[in-house]
Every structure is written in structure tokens, then in C-alpha cells.
Image 1: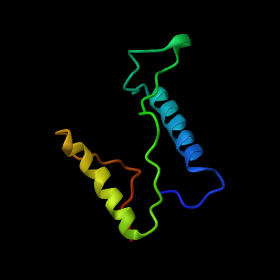
Image 2: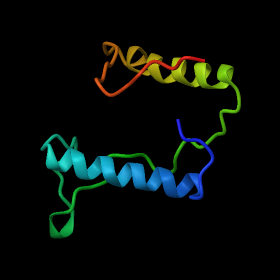
Image 3: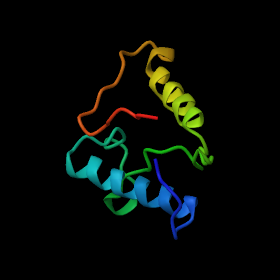
Length: 90
């Protein structure tokens, strides 16, 4: 979750995507590593555009978290758990 910030939501999303792509390359786990672009650059692992909405209430945040957590099951995958993700306590 990102609170009000001096940077625009577009800029924050771009920075998060860039940083995570660099980390995927660094960890040698980029999902598109087999398809390098010119000069060895990796293609983006992200869809075009970003999901940019303002979550103004705890209910908005809980609804968004539930949506994201349900995505793997929609694809027949197990739930994802990451050590750096913390529960949202409304």
C-alpha cells in the first residue's frame, strides 16, 4: 500500500516495476530470460499499464487484498506466500 506521495501513482508503479525487474535478473529468475531483447536487455515481465486506484477505506484495501490473493486459484495454482508480505490489519 502506498500513501499520499509527492510522486505520481504512475511514477511509483514504474519505479516498482523497474526495481523488481532488476531483482528478477539479479536472482536469475526472470520469467522471460530465454527471450532477451537487443543488447541483452530483458523484456518486461509486466503487462502494459498498471492497476491504479485509490483505496480510501479499510474495506477498499481488504477487497483489493482478497482479489489479489484469489488470483493464483483462478489459474489452478496454489496460494502464494512471501516472507516480506504482512497481513493488513484494518
